[in-house]
Image 1 (cartoon, rainbow, N blue to C red):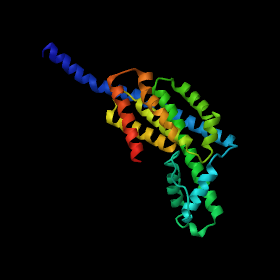
Image 2 (image 1 turned 60 degrees about the vertical axis):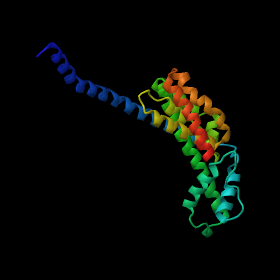
Image 3 (image 1 turned 120 degrees about the horizontal axis):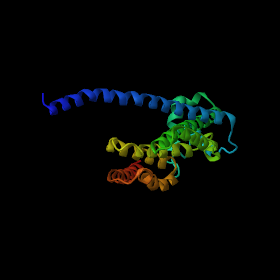
Length: 250
């Protein structure tokens, strides 16, 4: 056997063990990530239990519109500022009350407010999970990211609106979904990154139109935070164009 053949054989023999070592080292990191996510979600839940909002914003307006829509009366189910919010809540409410004729308007209104509020609360849970994951992707130490995320969740605007039937917090969650996708590793699929980021940006805008102003900066976030590469430039441009197209088509 020649020296070259011996070296090649040794390299091939060492490759599986090297791959297994990488897999073994990745397992504890993934486990710690799940623990960190659980910590921020528990923190968010405790904040919700310990506080209550003093201003429900337009929740009652949305609730009235949903009741009128279920009753077949004139109602505003779509409006420019929050194109997706009422239709989404109406779809969920129609599943909860397939036969609204059996209940009073007061019961329907309470159920509509409950549906709207739970959609916002769940959007908040998604937002804190994605915020922590995004911070981890841009290089923030794991437990620093956890502490920062809990501070983010405790912010008055976020925590207050998460307990209302408004669409602002779900909109922020979708914006964070796009940021998380864009901050991914260079080895990740370019098409998948563009698709997730585009859908996230589009849904954010459809939940609250002014978030369109955050899309360009969000698309550039990976370049600013992780470095400028041709791939990141392509993805940022494609995400802006695709999210704009999706928003227009919706």
